[in-house]
Image 1 (cartoon, one colour):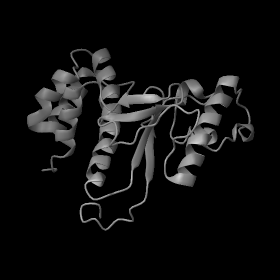
Image 2 (cartoon, rainbow, N blue to C red):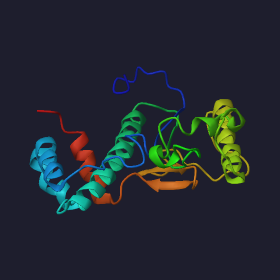
Image 3 (tube, one colour):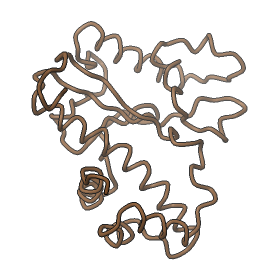
Image 4 (tube, rainbow, N blue to C red):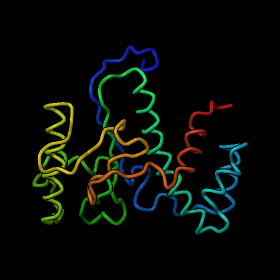
Length: 206
């Protein structure tokens, strides 16, 4: 629809969370052998380049690279969607990466899980029972709910007293880190990683 310019051209706000992919430890059992084999199967001619940027000489290194590459891929895919959208859209898109862990007895296990930002966006911390919120949590909720209320009213999350949230076109190659920090964040660990992942994600499956 975007390629043909047939979408409803409205401002868009979208994002992902630090632990969207499966809890605070996303790949706890990854091994070097598994990671290297998976890279070869998935990326074929680009596997060597991938393993240079995300090395897996040891099991510990493989686990770290598995987590990093998964997060980079998640953010880069959203960024590429925004780039493709911009070819036919006149309205702005805003992307975010949520990194704040919702406090509670399961926080160490799940981290900043999928939908974990919702109580903050809705400024509804008082409705979450069994969680020991701090003044910092309430400040985050005030900021998040202000961003979302501004976006609902105007199509732009920015407003007085808030850290500036650039649109995807305003700061190419970045997303807005929200939660523990409120500032633009590169969608991948380096330009080389972003370019490689873009090539991988845009390569049709065999």
